[in-house]
Length: 114
Image (cartoon, rainbow, N blue to C red; front, top):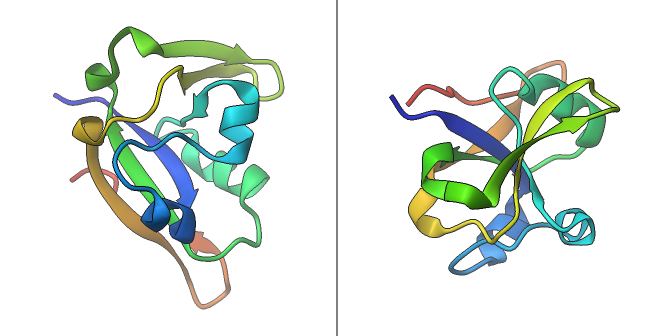
């Protein structure tokens, strides 16, 4: 079974990238691409993307990232997060889907299982 990790990306940033994805300005400043597990996504979305529209959720095969993927402890969140110390290869991407909003304006994640 494929273990998926997830990256939240503004749609325009995602669509303007061609080939491998090299991360946001925040990722590049930190020296790695930030990812979340399925369980971590709702809080990541709330903390770092509140009020932002037109976001994409990118699903990535964790095993395809090899040794460049490291699980590192976040003191601010109290748990390990997947960090990628390389560009995100197109070959590792399973899908990219929009994050929508419901009638109350709350973010709604797409189906994470397929």
